[in-house]
Length: 505
Image: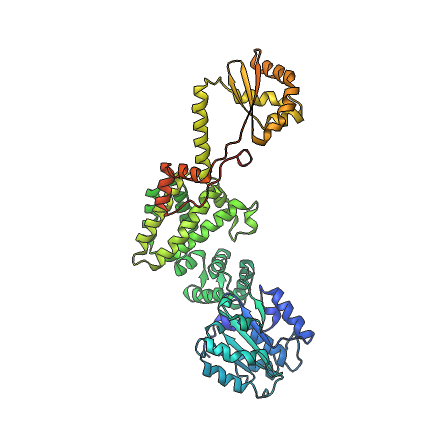
């Protein structure tokens, strides 16, 4: 007997065997139990998540000798013929190879005939987005008003390519990627049943590589079980070319800290090991995505598919950087993945792209640069006024001693301190507080005098608020050398500049 691959051997045979699609299965089971089955369905979602398997189970549920039922027996002649693909009432059509208008016209003629033995004829059109426009147009009328004994199921990985006229005639059920935890549980169950010895770390790595596709995970398990009778994490890495977590951590730290020598050294080590550069770049993108998630989430271990040790390593890495820097680096290495994929020399493309991204370690956020510029201007101004030492500290300490309502108004003001003269300055709409300040001049004067250790003279001034034109501010920013360097390096442009105010400090 010929060998049956795991993906086919363990294909779901009933609704309860399907994993990761519980909401959709609930809809289908209720529809069958209540006799409200739609005449046409569109199953969309990534590869290997159960679209075609669900379509076959639906056909069993409708044609089972005990049906229509949401729990088909799987043993009657109707169920077994659908399972082995010999049923005359269930037609599976490949949309990629039967995409012409003539193929659909032939289908339209065939749907007129009643089922040969079951209750319904079920047409499963796989990769339906591959049908031509003419074929879709030919299908429309039949899809909208098929004979009562006909059910259509269109399956696709690209729902956006399905015409809206077709979508409007179908009940759309979007399948989602299967959670990694559920894939690991199913892999463990199948491995035990098949007598495959495999470590927990190896199962985790296979589930991660499958990227939400149960079929892909079983294909990988099938392949590796032929490679080794006792599957370890290293076997999965060697066969799939998956990057080592330690190397990913090292090169990430080198990128964050701008250690270009270390970046080149690690890439050289990857080439020496025979690591697939394209696969490594894809893994690096995923790794930085995990770093960014971990920096944003309070409990990253709840959303990241990593071990406890790896979680601790990730926390150590993000302590060396910021969300801003991680976002910029992730954006750059996503471009790197594209460059590496199409490059004639993947190694060179990776080296150049990562070296370019490493310069982000020397860049500062625009807001920080503007704050530094403003601080520099204030320092020059205060120097010309011969500012006394620590006036800000004196101001803050004095305000703390003043009653809350009055202190709140004073906190809106600016001030200058020249010798024994303290000038309180209100800008724009804040000038309405002047009356309150003048009524309490003596109390304010006494508190500041105590803080300075001398008799203070108080003055109050109001000035009109100067509006900074965004055009002028943008030109000022563009004159900064570090801004010019960043724009040239990353081929960027400044979209908008927001003046710094008291509210966004």
